Length: 479
Image (tube, rainbow, N blue to C red; front, side, top):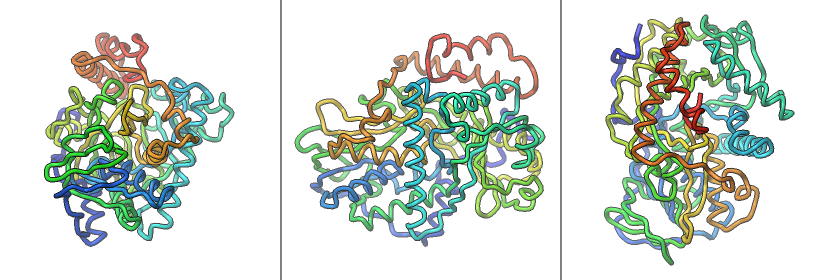
């Protein structure tokens, strides 16, 4: 059995994820869009060819067909987080307790309802895009494997009941959880009916094609090197420039060090491992409902099945970045985090103990100070931005597209009035305190969670370190 200290079966690297490899093969290795090599003038320039940038482009063209829109992407569309994530799609009924802390009761309900609007929007796109995106609606299952995690899950049920939406978070006992996915370590669970899984890179590539079909100009292999506010604004790239009345920065984790968002945002890495196809073992454990599953850890394990009977297991426990930096070793090739993902697979699904791991990859997550994304406009400019998805980005990026499109158009609507645009986002400690403190707290919480999973009381020093965020009234890093 693997352990967090051993090397993983497959070393993660800096190449494309399995999701992206599969998606590119499925579309027949579509030709890349050419890079920007001269100067272009458009109404709106979007930086970032992942979900947020592509949804924004599509919504702008839908709402104002006369707008000229161009998008620049440093790699190819889908090469970043949009093509690396777990592909578990759900809104904020799964996050009501945190949303209440950030926005109050009514604000949390609005956040969750907007997540339902986004879920409907993504479903409609999937149904009409003309591609098989492996969309499966099986709900979301959160499971507890320790008494501490049971207490955490109980807060979801209690909050939903208190807010008058008990059906949004349905408690399950051990027998009911194991009827959905039979694991001897599952003690209890909560089922959230609104949820789906998707092949994340196929979704990104389908959005890319839809944007091209809608008349959006896309320039791939075109990183932004600078953006300047003005009339017009200027997006500078290595070999060309975009002049635009409005600019949207949709680069998510890459905004961690940017002046408009840095005090509200940090980043760390998350890793996934993928098994060989094992449909017979999935039948053996009764996992046939296509649920996206996560455990109750803070550094969560998240897992789902694929259309060809594989299991993808993620671990959100990767290294933290300093001052927004994302070096390739820690964010794409950290063997320790890939090993934790594999160890989680073997522990949570022991029926797969001897299943071969075929792929491993990692990527960056942008985490906001209150775990909700935020969208805004840099004061005194027409530069708009959105980030802070906190590892929960497939559904909320649709929200991001709606919010950013409204900001570009100067609309006063449900999106710009929502907590995603209008709340006060708390600040984080400055560097180097943010990095040093974050690393210490991460280590303490990982230690506590490892001890609790073995049924042991964590060491005193780890318990003290894990309690620091709550003692300082921080919303990030609090178990």
